[in-house]
Image (cartoon, rainbow over all chains, first blue to last red; front, side, top):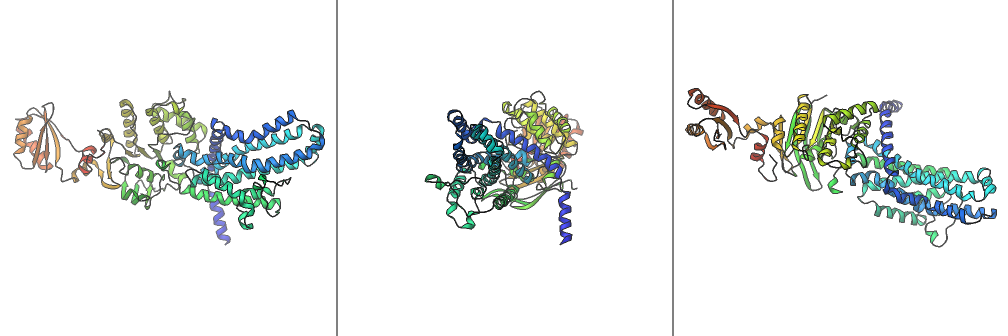
Length: 287
Length: 314
């Protein structure tokens, strides 16, 4: 057993990690530029920053008495839980990640990468990293802006809440949720885009699955990105009426377990995606 | 390391549609032309060779390497595909630089090789323009530049003369010829057989997914025994020569050359035929200027073995 482990480790060390790192960095640069600096991405910017614009208008137009801070904190939590996790990041990631492989197949340019001295797994993971960086650049920035604008109107009291109260912890939790949501939805949509010519119907099924997931048995609830993220919310918002459909009510789980569970789910999805990439064939005529 | 490209009983089916069937090939260095009508399986064979599609059965190795071992395989292989599309928004130069840096090269080395490749395909002036604004011929050239930039030992070219003007065609052929002389493997598919024929060492004829014949062009021609060889003899009295040649029974057809200064003769026994021509030349009654096979080329072999359905251009 020890001998096998040593051989495995030696094999692992002999891999051209330096080359893979160099290739991945180049690919990430190409992809991030392509994801963010294109007119086609306008609607993803819109998805990320539409709450920011609304909060900015609210900041400029409304008064901010100190007693309203608790209510605004709930509003911000609601925006993260109901808008970003369930709609904004969901569809933003659909736009970004489903284009990484499928988009290049539609544009008939994927073969250039497959004809490079580049392991297909490195290609896939680099594209996934690029998609994640692009999504985080948009939704992470939007989240920080939302948070800053939401408490800016409260002046010194808001500053005190952010730096001496619960504020900074909440921001960190929201950013962790954004990161995990981008990774989770990103991995799912990347895989769907490799499995289906048009991944949108499958993505809508995922959307429906996420909506009905709370009524599923406990085991099935684990196959959901939103159910893990729910446990990381620093402020609990209970949905009412139509929002109840968008609310995931799973059994309470510690935050680290939820994060780890989601990371395991992401790793499983990416491993299967690597297998699909390994066996991918270029037949553009069928696209 | 082997110096061969080997297909061992390779088949490829796209669902129920046959791509290629039971192909066995052993290709040595030099220029090899894949000849066959549209849809015969030439591109499938090239895609199989480079791992863009996986064989349904059989194995393929290129210089002893498998396409799955991409790190090593694509350092040795360059593939200029027929797909006329590129990553969006790039200039020709950026396209080459991205490709070379993915080989793990230092940017300075990548810069040098990109410049060299652009010079070889004569595209230096347009290098910093967006590929989207290139003509079809320029796009063909930049694809070729990308395939040769890293100095591969095997170059796979799918219809590399498509879209090129006559001057660019001649330049490309000269480049292929030079690369072949340097000991590289060149596997070319082209419809313009007349031009490719001049630089080819070997042909592989494919139709309907099946390999019909392969080998040195002259050997393949000699093996097509049911089609008598055609020989052009340039001389001052072609009619007299034709009459003399018909006195022997293995001469089956004679056709005058358009300029009246030669005759095309078909013979079932080429050795006897040449012996007789020598005797006539020695007699001195007819002044023979040149004797050359007239159907000892890829195009004629194609016509004999495959026919003219969707045939190649000359």
